[in-house]
Length: 307
Image 1 (tube, rainbow, N blue to C red):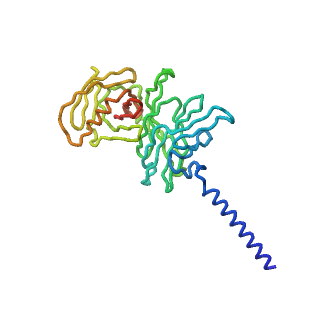
Image 2: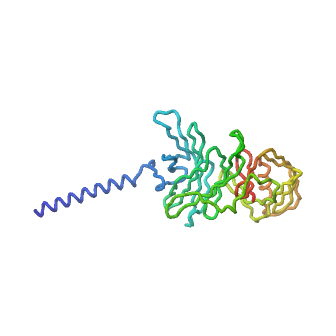
Image 3: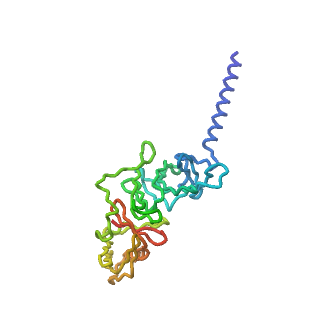
């Protein structure tokens, strides 16, 4: 009797071990294609994102799905522009803020915010948050541990053929407890109405230039680069070395600078050439609800941010 009992115990133990090993292999030894949102994302361009109840696994920043079985129409999800990296949960690691573009083949183009939180083996992908439909994404900034998505919308009186020019900002907060993101509602006193802002309302100070290839430039000396739009369609520009001036043209939200005349001082390590070079590429502008002036360069290649 004792011998039979031992045989049964050994058999049960063996079966348990077989099930355990099989389960471990199934859920941990993956083939690289079963990336689960929020768990095992190796990098942001080859990760899974949940949109509208569906999971899209991106390969090199893009994924496609049939809208319905055997349908010729497909929903395409891709990373718009370049992710912006920085610490969003105060752990000393570079997380990523991402814009996802969803094109469903008929009803419009939707843009979503998502964060990728750095872990020991890759990134933990958060839920997605709708930014808007038929908007124009602009820049992503990291402020006070939050991701700020700047974008442009059409004014209430404008038709769909009008290019979006009214700036807005979506502040995204990452909840350390839940691992999810949500909109952070800023105090009303900190908001301004972009529709009431004008180029000539103040002296603008250059804060940063962001290019769509991921490069960013900030002034080494804060407040050293300024620009004033004068009523006679001229600009007065201050840099970390010389003073500059010239004419500009404006038509709607289009703006362009003519040839700029500069004093001729030489300053070692000056950022003046880079700054003025980007100004010559400016083609349009918009304002944000944070009181910022965004100058957009040609071919949507980047933006210059002033405050």
